[in-house]
Image 1 (cartoon, rainbow, N blue to C red):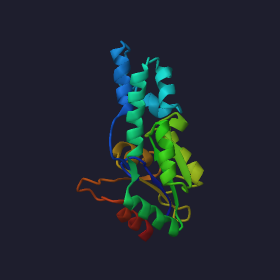
Image 2: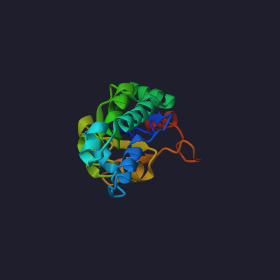
Image 3: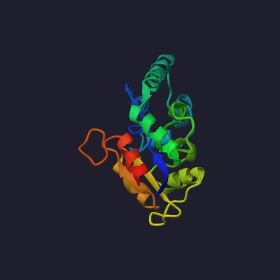
Image 4: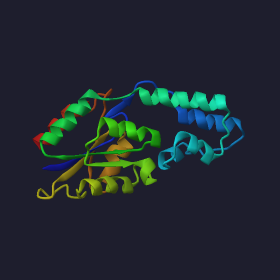
Amino acid sequence: MVSGVIFDAFGTVVRIGIRTSPYRELLKHGRRQGMSFDPAALHIAMTTNLSFLELASHLGISLSRSKRDELIQALDVELSSIAPFPDALVAIKQLNEAGLKVGICSNVASPYVPIVRGFFPDMDGYAFSCELGVMKPNPAMYRSICSQMAVEPGYSFDLEAGRIVMIGDSKRCDRDGPRTIGISGFHLGRTEHGQIRNLTQFAQIVINQ
């Protein structure tokens, strides 16, 4: 029996229609100013609860008015292009009607959080890397969402307690990472010939169990 379902956000319940990659462009601009960023510097944006311009200031990147406007416009275009996957809306509705708890756990920069919450306002829990200061597959991410949902991972074989399952488009973060603390992780392969290709299929598998 499954008692709770955790979803990844981007690539799973929402998609970006127009990718402008404003954060990557910001770091490129910083490098042109002579700054040397670690290859993982982009993760700073994912683990700090800062606005786009606050992040630029935090990193010491100088922006002219024209460059600032260009990057903010790129961010606005990307944010405006985000939309929920239709099957996500259906699947979450079905899971709610079946009495299961649902949550979202995602590596995401601060400006994207209100978009995700806006499309899915009534989840039982949200774990966003920019708010927690860590990223999947750090176990703290999975423990946080389970705590908010009032479910306990690690009971895969305890029928009374119920199982907790997670699904997302990253094998590392949404399938393998959750399994390290007892959450049954599944990979969503929308464009692959995988076992699970859409969320309505996944919801039916969960409900039928």
